[in-house]
Image (cartoon, rainbow, N blue to C red; front, side, top):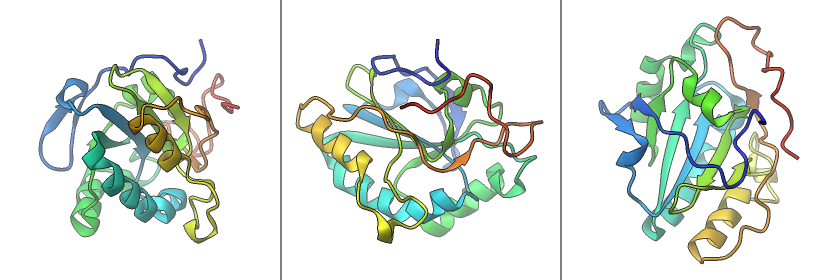
Length: 192
């Protein structure tokens, strides 16, 4: 079994606290499609692409796509990735997604999150149809030539087959608790 979910795998369940004061289960998201991103507060690849992600969320939410962000980074590696900083970031930027905190990192392990950001898109049966990057230049979207997330969601919401279901996520590695900030699990590897 690979570290990261494979195309066709079912979305692992979760129960996580959100910055809005609620706790969410996977089953709380009833929309037709679900896009989950593993993200954080400090990563320049996340910060550089957040506004492009906002555009994508606003474009597809009326087409039945729900966006959920999960921060699994260890607060012991970067204090700015703790829950209080998550709440401040959502208050400041008013992002149009639910922002969940995976303090135990169990959900990151269940999905096989590699980097921040790392996207997982699920169909109406919660089967994985896409995993990888959002865009090809997340640190500076003014240089972007490919928006994989937008393409995937366009195809999904039109009932088409996903033309490129797997890409390598581009960003900082997930910060695993008790490990060097550049450490990755032994079985974590490029997806393509």
